[in-house]
Image (cartoon, rainbow, N blue to C red):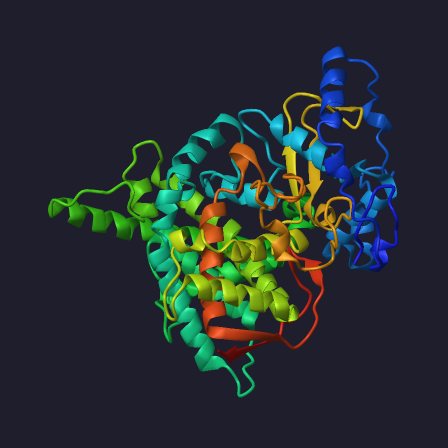
Length: 518
C-alpha cells in the first residue's frame, strides 16, 4: 500500500521509522489565520490554475490512472500517492469534474468550519438519480441538497442523533447480536473457524438496521425468512455488488442500449422500494390498531418508522426514500468496519487482551452492555476509532462550497469539489506516531481531557450539520457487538488481507478468523 506524504521522508512509506513530531499540530492556527487574512484582504493569493496536480487528457482527465492496473480498486492508494507527489493540496480533473484534494488537518478544519448552513456533498452517482427520475421516486437525505436536505435532515436527527433516543435502540440491537453469537457457535468448524464471516456480519448489520429503521426482524439468521424479506435481503446484497459496476459505465450508453448491470440495478432498487412501502403499510395498520385501543405514541420510544409516519411534514414516498437511502448507507459500512475491527484485534493479541480486561472490569459475566456502561469503556471505543483511522470504509469526505475559499494560498472557486483523503491522512506520520500500527490507546484522553491528536486528522463520520446521520446508531451497534464478542471469544487470525475499493474500502479476499470460547 502507498501511504503519504507531502514533502516528507519516504522511509515511512516502506514501513521504516521516521520522526514522530506532530507537525500539523505545531502549526495549528497559523494557516487558518493566513487563510482568513488572505481571503479578507485579497492579497498574495494564487489562482486556481496554479494548484499542482496531474495533467490528464482532454475530456477524460485522469480516468486512465484509475482504469489501468485495476486502479479502480486502489483509489485510496492512488490518492495517497498523489499527496506524496504533489503535497498537501492538489488539483485533478476526472471526466470533466474538477476536484481539489486537501490533506492538512488545519485546512480540513477550515473547510468544515466554512461549509455554510446547507453543506453540499459530492453529486450522487448518475444512474441512481436517473432511476429516481424514471420511477418518480422521492429524494432522501443522502441525495438531497440545500434547504430541501435541511428540512428532511432536521426531522431524521430527532431519532438518529439524540443520545437518549439512540440509547433506546440497545435492546433490539442486543437481541440481534444474541442471534449472531448463537449462529457463530453453531456454524464454527472444529478449529473455531467461521465460514464466510463477511456474510455473517452483513446479515447482522442488515438485521440491526431493519430492527431500528423498519421496526421489524428480517429473519436473516432464521431457517426460513418470509419470502418478501428473503427477496429484499437478496436485492440488498446484489445492489452493493453492482454499485461500482454501474458507477463507471457512462450514463449516455443507456440512450442506445441498457446494459445488464443497469437492468439488474433497477430490479434491486424496485424490490427495496417495494419492501419499504410494504413496511409502511404494515406499520400504518398497526398504528391504527393502537389508536383504536387508545394508545399514544411516545416520542422517546425506539420506534423510528412509527415516528416518521406520525408526522405531517414528511410524505410516505419521502419516508420510503429515506429508509432505503439510510439502509444503503448503513449496512455495508457498519459490517465492514466491524469486520476490520475483529481482524485487527485478532492480529494484535495484546490489544485484544487489554480490551477483554476493560470489558470484564465493567461488566459481570453474561451482563449485556448498555449506553451507560459503554461510557466506562474508552479503550473499546478507541478500538473502533483506530480501525476507522486505518481502514475508513468511505476513504474520503467531500464538500462543494457556495463561495470561494482560500486554502494553502490558492483561491478555490465556488462549486468545486474539495476532497478530504481520510485513508491518506490516517497514515500520515506528521499526524500520527507509528501510523501503520493498531494502537487504540492513542485515543485515550490524558488528565487534561484532551486527545494528543488534531481533531480533524481523522474524521471518518464527517463534521458539522452534514455529519453522518447514522453515526451514533452505528457506533452503538459496533460497541455492543465488540463487548459481546470480547466476553465470549478469543480471536485468532488465519490470514493477512489487504484493502481494496469496491463502493467502500473492503478486504481484498476472505478474512479467516478463529472464534475460540473463553
